[in-house]
Amino acid sequence: MLPRLHIVTDSLDIVRGVLGHGPVAVQIRVKTNDREAYALTCAALELCRPAGALCLVDDRIGVALAAGADGVHVGADDLPVAAARRVLGPGPVIGATCRNPSAARAAVADGASYLGVGPAFATGSKSGLPDPIGPDGIAAVSRAVPGTPVIAIAGITAGRVSELDCYGVAVISAVAADPAGATVEFLRALAAHPGLGVSDLSLGASHPGLGGSDSWAAALGESDSSGVSDSAAGASASASRAGDRQ
Ligand SMILES: Cc1ncc(COP(=O)(O)OP(=O)(O)O)c(N)n1
Ligand SMILES: Cc1ncsc1CCOP(=O)(O)O
Ligand SMILES: [Mg+2]
Image (cartoon, rainbow, N blue to C red):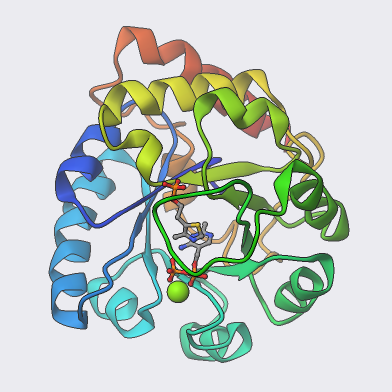
């Protein structure tokens, strides 16, 4: 099952900080070149595997394949979802950026495993984005693709999780100052907020990229992952219980 908290990063220190507190997906987003992205992805996988965290690569399908990552996230400037699915086959996770219901339906038809939807709110982490679609825009996309996890992105803090009717959230800046503490805070907020589609999403082996890999059980925190702090254990257990309902 897909983790509800996605940490988007180009920093191994951030990867280290967010692991061991509960189920997370780490998305390696390196905008320089393949070589740096590959090196960071390989190093992140060394940390993510024992922690049972999902590891995805932004944009770079060749890097994801070469490093043995769990999947990719693609947007408008990247390989189209259908082409990415042809290259990767049915197993790996493919996330697709969408901003509206019709694009979301098309991405799902083309083989997307989950959708990254935004900008939810204003953000300083990426320039050139269209106006924020807000909680209403996020909810509209969630409702358009029942059965597919919608991960909201842009300007999201733990305090705003409860405004969002979707499966989960992706964050950059909110975990920058205190990766471990912020991760615990987000996992608690998500556990307290079932979100739209979390309780009735059924992600079986037929869903592209979801359900076929052993890493999913681990990614959910169902394994006895080491380093889970006492304070985080409640959030982790609750998040796993939320996942159990799917
Ligand atoms: C979960 C998630 N959603 C959206 C994005 C944005 O991807 P993209 O549109 O390809 O933009 P860049 O991240 O490549 O600048 C994402 N990375 N993750
Ligand atoms: C990569 C990306 N794509 C849309 S918004 C965004 C950045 C989100 O970062 P933050 O969580 O700091 O707003
Ligand atoms: Mg991209």
